[in-house]
Image 1 (tube, rainbow, N blue to C red):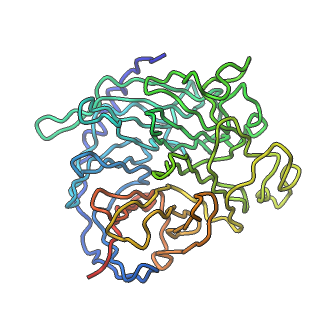
Image 2 (image 1 turned 90 degrees about the vertical axis):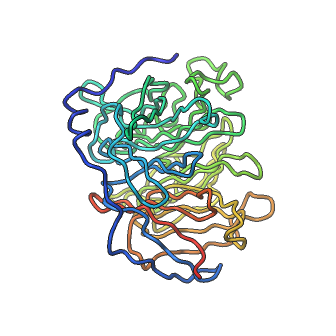
Length: 388
């Protein structure tokens, strides 16, 4: 059921509105990079973001960019960055928490609805929530109106880690939401009575679709699509098949690429290819009956973040390939799938010379790849396209 959300406290709104628009990054000349598809140009379109997290394109080609401290910006193609959009609810901006992903409704042209995920403060603790709101623009300013929380991860938890949380609309208009194990609640991941370590599938109003795999299972959360996940930070729909794909963080090693299917168990924390941060083993090994193997895993970790299929004509050699960013890996990763769209047959590490944490990757309407680099005060919006 949709629950109206109270707008942020007046004091917070005044602070955000007082923050001026960011200027386009100056002094960052385009960089030429070598790739398997030939020479590319990497252009800094805008800079000065504070931990940018999520990127989404509006139908007119402008972009929405979230900043983890709780700000939403609108960026023009030329790199003009707006003042913070008003009406964003209060977020738990600590550690990995804050304003996270954003997605434009499939019917945005008529509804003007946007969906966003965030770490919601809940009486001293927090949890991943998803809200939707109408984006309005008037007199040069923008705001979110009629903000409604449509989903809340349960239970809430202390700490500030492993919120997830990517959003991806399926072909049928349902919304996939990735949810982390909150680090301290890994014992809850295998339980269907919680949202911890799950991917959920909801209708646009937040209700659970009747054909979800556990919709009729006693004591199970009806929103659950798949379970056994640690901290999924990338999600995308394969445009060829409609299949959901995800990337998730392991501990020390064991980052995974998966295509989560309805009702299936992806093993965490019973099976993993990673080790605990202390070096200790986790769970029972790398395989167990009834638990799925990843399509691919990384050891050592690259901390994959953001996920996008390339469908454009601007870079024909990469058409159909999958791209993810690397946080600790400081790279853009290209993954080529086999004709069945089930296995990775080629991997290419790109932009390693950049040395920056890549938080999100999207294909733009211009056919270029657009990236967000994650930095406390100097995050950038980058465009990667064929060089001249």
